Image 1 (cartoon, rainbow, N blue to C red):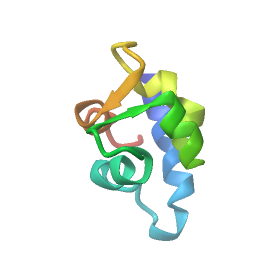
Image 2: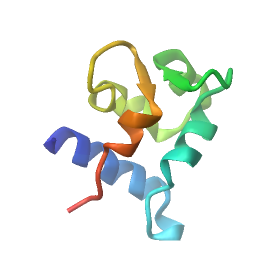
Image 3: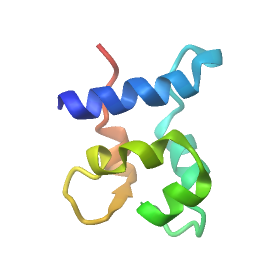
Length: 78
């Protein structure tokens, strides 16, 4: 959980102008380049967003993909 919160904190810094993390739907839209509903490591790297640096932390089940459910379960920073 601590790793997920750390990853979220860094995503928040990427959205510092808004002072809030981007919603999961925006994270998905920015990183799911083939629009299949999941973000692969390759997509995250190609998209060039902060998500790529924290891919393993957000891929909570270790299947090599980040789903909308995993993005929604990131939780707010504390």
